[in-house]
Image (cartoon, rainbow, N blue to C red; front, side):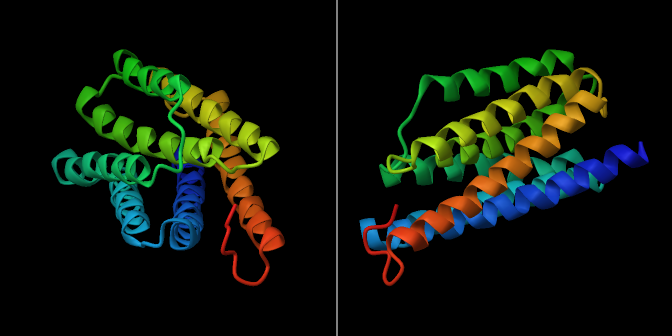
Length: 201
């Protein structure tokens, strides 16, 4: 059990880093393409609430306390992405959400897992945002889609048998891949527009 919490904590740090990198990237894109900052703020707030819910669950806080941030976080992220018009919705996003929700039947603690599922959905949506942003280069898009699917597969596997090696491997690989893609996208941004990034990605 100790090893499980260590791995989940490492993955949690990667998730927090991914949320920050996504926000920073969206902030620059929004600034120069849309001329506003409100959408990236909603995304940051949604990511922060999701992270708070995740950290609270890892520390064993009560489910009632963590329910609100875990539910509001994904809602704000979806709102921000839909308002930006920069991310193309894809049917596979709905399939991924369906897999996560469907894995509820595999969990013993339904109430706790419902809250965890909202956090998982938020992470997958953020991964998909990197994949389906209209100007993401194809290699980066494919890698981001892979990270989202690996994370999606982690959810039911971990629900069926918490802490099993395959699930833990998928968790670390998917989050690490996501962070690596976001770092690479920041590099693309600087490479294409080293001075002002006015055209963004």
